[in-house]
Amino acid sequence: MSLRLVFVADTHVPKRARALPDQVWAAVDSADVVFHAGDWVSEALLDEFEQRSRHLVGVYGNNDGDGLRQRLPETASVTLDGVRFSMIHETGQAKGREQRCEALFPDADVLVFGHSHIPWDTVAPGGMRLLNPGSPTDRRRQPACTYMTAVVVNGRLDDVLLVTV
Image 1 (cartoon, rainbow, N blue to C red):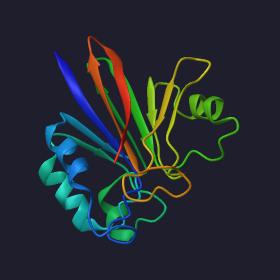
Image 2 (spheres, helix red, strand yellow):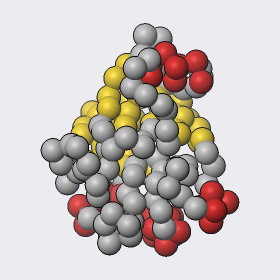
Image 3 (cartoon, rainbow, N blue to C red):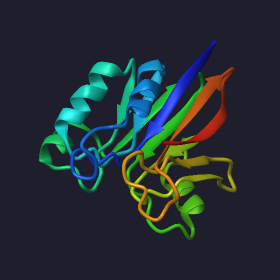
Image 4 (cartoon, helix red, strand yellow):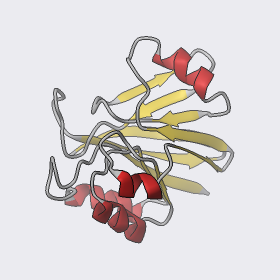
């Protein structure tokens, strides 16, 4: 059995976009587990993710107000078919990120993060996979808006794909 995953971050609805693109909602609707790495901005968006996701894992970001901070943790961890995921919004500067994150999340196989709006997919020296899906609504200095999909199958993270919106 495989689990279909969707990773999003930095949606900034309704400040940077009035709504999440239909393409992203379609991915959310078909996923088994959805990860949102913060900067939702709106509690209404969290409500919609909760209604549409089979299983939602979320954290708050630096642009999320008190209401979202009361409903979401700063960090989250979940194990899916033996793969240990952790998530946080911000990891600091790119230089030294892998080593820093391995020290902060020693039990994670995969760390999902956001904040920079810059897609990131690397493997730390100790084997932790670091994933930042970018932003589906605010590309900043990137060529396109993005999110990620993947599957967990037989205790492995596989088919990680950066999807252009």
